[in-house]
Picture 1 (cartoon, rainbow, N blue to C red):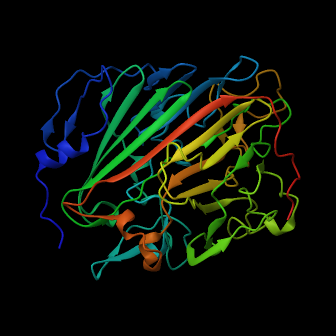
Picture 2: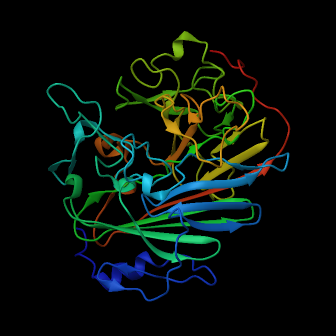
Length: 425
């Protein structure tokens, strides 16, 4: 038996029970409860800036998104290493919304048949992917539906020199999901680190919740003189010996597959470049029908008990050209890699990215010009009860809140790893 619905005051106090940041000012509202404070204003492009030693970032309320992330490379040149737009107003009008840097929700990734069952009740949510003649809106739901959380304006409820917190209240029935959910996302910059904490509470009904961060990475800032692609980035998934099997439209089949050493999907036995196997014809279809590359959910198999902050990174992405490396630490147990096969050169680079003295190269993001790394739980786990993910993906009033934590730790080095073409399988 689940507990009765929490009072507004109680769930508000739980939601705000996170590590307080010295000098933090809370602003905005929690449900119907006002949280006093003074909000700092965004800049002329609608962006909020936070910084730490050796790192600076811009965030926007739309999707609680990161729009810029600045680091110096090994040559001392500042690079903006994430995809986005120059002005915050463009996120809401772009018709090719690529989930740039936002928080997909209330359920990230895909939901098979746009439906799920909770306590013997079937819920149908709005489809928005893979349209057919008989289902013109789509046959599945991606990242929470056509108006998922990364399509909405969040409220800035806290902002300091090195941290910002966004809040969103998702009403009962929105996109077809049952019950109200209140969520808080806090981003904090430290010494060459970017930490995030996502908290979500189901306040009225039992509902699925699974969040993620959908950041598009190019550690060269699209300024590599040899290539605008991210296929030269080296990837290592030391705990990623298995992946979730999917069908031709990337819906999980229920199968858990082994990533054999030196195979196409092996990034755990040794680091290798994203593009190492792109000349292998077997990679066609690896990310769905007629798709070459990766859109793959790797399982993070760590031996319990473990401290996610100390047990080593679940992923390491590195560019030998810029020397920038990011190690990803997280409490989540799956990790999606998307090699940006869906980019088609129509998304413009920001003014802070790319080359300016090479007129032959378009100032756009090309196919395979980025890498998306999504910390999350097992995708579509709500439709795979045999996986036992309910306690991590289904929440109701009185339950502990949903929590996602991740830490991105940056460093610089000039040692090359993962030569293009190694590990061909």
